[in-house]
Length: 149
Image (cartoon, rainbow, N blue to C red; front, side, top):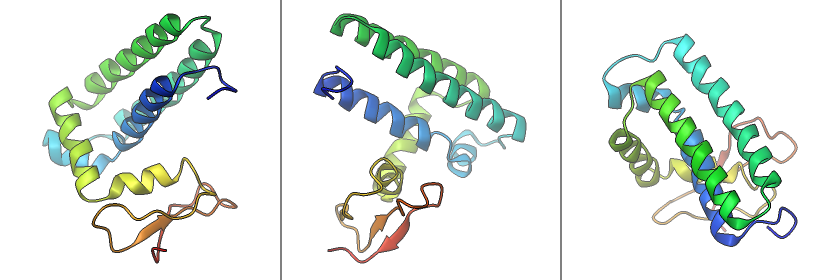
């Protein structure tokens, strides 16, 4: 946080948003929630938007000279991503909330979160029988279940 010059609250918001964006690309769940298939082109557009907004977020937050300017950048980029995501997929804020709740309830969010810290010791999510771990030497590989410590 100090290295990037951002506050703990900003770090929490950026982490939440990163997890929400990653989870929002779980196409099986998105299709179940919207009741329609998400075509390959829509998936491609959503992935492009995710990468574009991620870079925009990084650039704008790091270039901001005050906490107020950083929060404005965070709000602008989040809002822009979500507007495009909803347009591309047919999702709504309520459906995205359902998607995130499902991810938490089935412990899938822990797999996504483990990608952010591949060298961290496995942590047991509440009520989980297994932990997940990502191989730091192969960051593109999906996380794998491991015995909890």
